[in-house]
Image 1: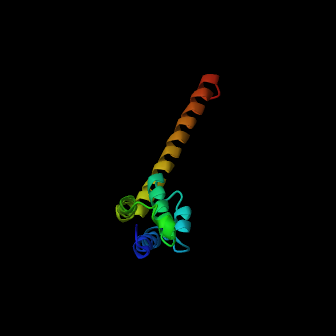
Image 2 (image 1 turned 120 degrees about the vertical axis):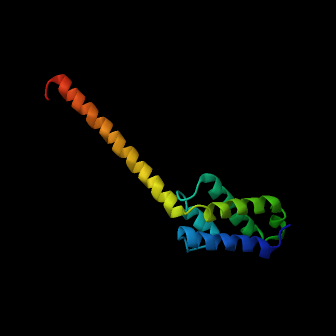
Image 3 (image 1 turned 90 degrees about the horizontal axis):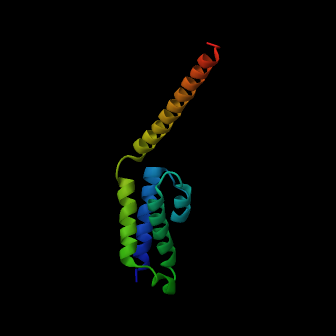
Length: 124
């Protein structure tokens, strides 16, 4: 069994990290995890949701016995490691840059194909 203060302390730590790193400041951890849909990988979102669920269950004596303390700490550590890892803004801007580069590359390919077809048909 996990003491209520311990499970909520882990959730509070994640709430402050979500506020500092992802700028999600409103609501409990459940809501912040739901708002962080595309900002977090699926595995990290799942771990954060697990910590939020454990914090919610910590107030109920029968439900808190269902939470595995080792799994709770492992999930918390994975979320903290991700949020305190590389700079998230840099990672997001790099992902955005990759999407734009892919779009530009695809447009160049389409433009080249249009030019080839126009030459082949005798319009250029």
